Every structure is written in C-alpha cells, then in structure tokens.
Image 1 (cartoon, rainbow, N blue to C red):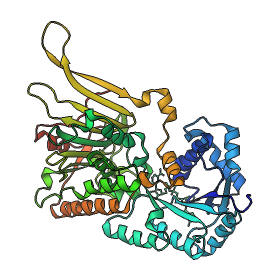
Image 2 (spheres, rainbow, N blue to C red; image 1 turned 135 degrees about the vertical axis):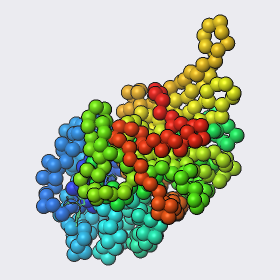
Image 3 (tube, helix red, strand yellow; image 1 turned 180 degrees about the vertical axis):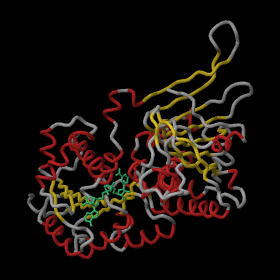
Image 4 (cartoon, helix red, strand yellow; image 1 turned 180 degrees about the horizontal axis):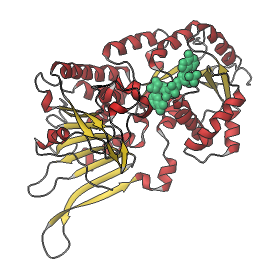
Amino acid sequence: MNNGKQHKTVFMIFGGTGDLTYRKLLPAFYNLFSLFKMPQDFEILIIGRKEYTTESYIDIIRPWLKKFTRTNFRDEVFERMCDHMHYLVADFTKEEDYPRIKEVVDQWGGVQQRLYYLAVAPQFFAPIAFSLKKAGILDPVHSHQVMIEKPFGVDITSAQILHQQMCTAFDDESIYRIDHYLGKEMIQNIMSVRFNNTLFEGIWNHHQIDHIQISALETVGVENRGEYYDHTGALKDMVQNHLFQILSIVGMEKPHSNSAEAIQSQQVKVLDALIPIENGKLHDHLVLGQYTEGFIADTKTKGYLDEDNVRPNSPTETFVALKLYVDSPRLSGVPIYIRTGKRTQKRATEVAIQFKAPQGVLANLLIIKIYPDEGIYLRFNAKKPGTTQEVVPVFMDFCQSCVYENRINTPEAYERLIEAAFKKDKSLFTSWPQVLSSWRFIDHLIERIAAEQAEVYLYPAGQNGPIQAEELLNREHRHWIDEEHG
Ligand SMILES: NC(=O)c1ccc[n+]([C@@H]2O[C@H](COP(=O)([O-])OP(=O)(O)OC[C@H]3O[C@@H](n4cnc5c(N)ncnc54)[C@H](OP(=O)(O)O)[C@@H]3O)[C@@H](O)[C@H]2O)c1
C-alpha cells in the first residue's frame, strides 16, 4: 500500500490463464523485474475466470517462468516479484464483475498509470473496453493505456469498426497495437544500420539496388492454431502486419526525430506508396501455396489438410510469395519480393538487399538477419590471393547473437514492448494509419485473388514453398537467396 499520493503503475492482464500470458507476458515481467527495469511502484492484476487464489496461481506460473525466462530464474527474485501479483476471479464478459476489478485497483490509491493488456481473442477487445468504461475504471484521475494483440480486424471494414468501438473508451493515443516483430532487436537495428552508415544509406536507392527480398520462413506448421489459421491464412497472418512492418522500415525516409509520430509517419508513406497490382497481372506478382506431408529434418510431418481444426479441402494458403513496387523517389522500379511460409526447409526471417552488379562479377549482397540468427552479412568482391587477377566473392559476417553478452543483453520482444508501454513510447507499436494503409492494400489483393481465381499450389513440407515461387523470380533472372551464410 502507498500513502495515497505516490505514482503507481497498475498492469491488468485480461486472459491471465492463457498461453500468451504464461509463455510471453509473465516471463517478460520477470526479466524486467530481475533487471530492475520495472517501474518503482507497480502491481500486476491477473484477471481469469478459473477459481484460483493468488497463491495457487503463483504455484501454476512458477514452472512456466522457470522454462521461459530469458534471464536466470531465481526463486528469491520470483518471490519478490510475486509480492506485486494478484489474481482476481472475474469473467470479462460479465459487466457485473467489473466493479470488483475497480474495487481492487482503487484500494491501491494514488494517481495510477493503468495499463490494460487484452491477451484475449479480438472479439472481446471492444466488450472489455466498454465494460471498463461503464464501471468507471477509466476515470479521469488516472492515466489509461490499452494494449491489444493483432489481428486488428480481418479487413479494412472490420478494423474501422473495431477502431471506432475502442475509441468510445480510449482515445487513439492510448491504444497500443502490438506487432511483436517491432520488438525484435534486428528490426529496430535496420533503422540504425541504414541511417548511421553512409556506407549503406548512400547506396540505399534505385540507382544501386537491384532488388530486395524479405523472407519469413518457418519449419513449424499451424500447431494448435488450426481453427484461427484456417480462416486467416498467411497473407493476413503475416504479410498484412509483420512483413509490411519490415517493408516500411526498409523503404522509409529518415525520420526527422526518434519520436513515434516521426517514425510511423515515414513508415505509412511507404505503405501508401505500394503500387496496387493491376487487373489481370496477378500471375506476375503472386504465388500462393499450401504444404502437404513431407519431411522436416528427417521427421515425417503431416500435410496442412490433416492438421487439427482445418476444413477438409481448405483453400487456405500457408505460403505467399509476392512481388511489389513502391512508388517513391528512393525505390521506384526496385522489385521487392516478399515471402512467408510454414513447414519450409529453412527457418529464417531476414531482409536481403541485392545491389546491381558490375559486369562479370557477383552482385554485392547485404543480408540483415532478424530471426533466429541476428546479424548482418555482406558479400563483396575481392582479388583471389595469388598471382592471378581473378576476382572472387568474399564475405563479412557479423553475428550479433553469437556474442554471449549481446545475447543476454538483448531483450525479448514482449519485454521491450512492455517497457516501452510503461514509458508511453509508441514507436514500437502499430499506428492506426499503418493498420488502415496495410489493410487497404491487402483487401485489394484479396479481391484480385478471388476475381482471377488464383491457384493455391501444393508444396511438400521441407521445401521453401511451391516451385512456382522460384519461377516468379527466375522469369526475371533472379532467385531466392537461400545460400548458406553465416
Ligand atoms: N499465444 C501466443 O503466443 C500469441 C501470440 C500472439 C498473439 N496472440 C493472441 O493473443 C490472444 C490470446 O492468445 P492465447 O494464446 O493466450 O489464447 P488462450 O490460451 O486461448 O487464452 C485466452 C484467455 O482468455 C481467457 N478467457 C476466455 N474467455 C474468458 C472470459 N469470459 N472471462 C475471463 N477469461 C476468459 C481464457 O481463460 P480460461 O483459461 O478460463 O479459458 C484464457 O486465459 C489471441 O487473440 C491470440 O491470437 C497469442
């Protein structure tokens, strides 16, 4: 308890008995706490409908934290953190339960920074926001921020409806839309690498760049998300949000400051400048795929249609390859190839910038490795040692995550996002104009897919997408960069 005047940060988790809370949020809190990065005076209120007490909840989360914390798990640190944790049995769909939430947080007194983390399915976002407002929890005495996970709608119309609904309780400034990719170290580093090196920024333009590739490939299948995924697909699950975030950072102009507004306004300009795919031209720009049974590292894996909660004969794509252009002075005419897929042979999220090549030698290649390896690879040409004048490609490979100190000092995405939210720094969150702009593009693309009846090509698990994805680039004498690097 405080003296009623002290500033207190109150973090409320709705969905406190869910996978996201156990695997990501609570380990992130532990890491922040153990590194003395939590606000000085804080409480965490877990809201769940299961009949736990605070003590029994703490017993449940202990093994999860032991398994998932990045920093060393220490019992005494955990116990100290648990002094700030409270479990409240409440059903967030029942308005009559909210006065009890209010009672708990009001008793902590003082002027509070209240953060509401909605670790729940999106259909509950607006009802929870309404109920918080109706119960008077969102009073003007305290400051309020709500954190929500993607998806932000399933198309532009549903996103607009959700936004309007959320804005009846919270103003846009208080809505923190999480795209956990923005919390990844190397995605933030793309900006640093670009804007702090004339070596890179000086040649980051259509005069020097041949093309760009952005890949997010996973060896895993849909796991236990079959029902959600089957109604979503790779375009909406990955491209509309995560890959467009990366694309907008790769293509943006230098922001005039590090403020969230400055960064996000540059990002949105890139998304607004994406050139819609012309009618009848889909085949030149898009390949959709779906995995069948195959082998991942010698282990036989089932096909998408045999996964749990997937519709028989489902047409849902588990792989997308796209060729895009941005109408901007910087990248005009530079093809940007995007690819994402499940059950691929390769597991990597990375950006590759291939530069134009002088005649007779290999092009310079810059690869920014985002996940699981973090680092930067640069291929250039040099004379082969010896008496000949033969030129050969050589490379420099900076592996950030190979350095133990870097690894232990690199916060995980949720850790970074929670800390940023405490500090009211919105630069790591998705702005509303970004959501609108990316849905506008994806909705149009989905209309074209339906109109042109784009085929979903099959690929065996363990292959980097269907053969047609390779052909998309081969037609232009290019290929996906899957070479061994690092
Ligand atoms: N898991 C991840 O890594 C991850 C990553 C990114 C985004 N997300 C998104 O985050 C959201 C939550 O994901 P999740 O994986 O944590 O889902 P989950 O495991 O199904 O958890 C949902 C939580 O909501 C609670 N809940 C449902 N109805 C309730 C009610 N009426 N009253 C009180 N609690 C209720 C559940 O409580 P019970 O335990 O009582 O059922 C559970 O704690 C989803 O929208 C998901 O798409 C998840």
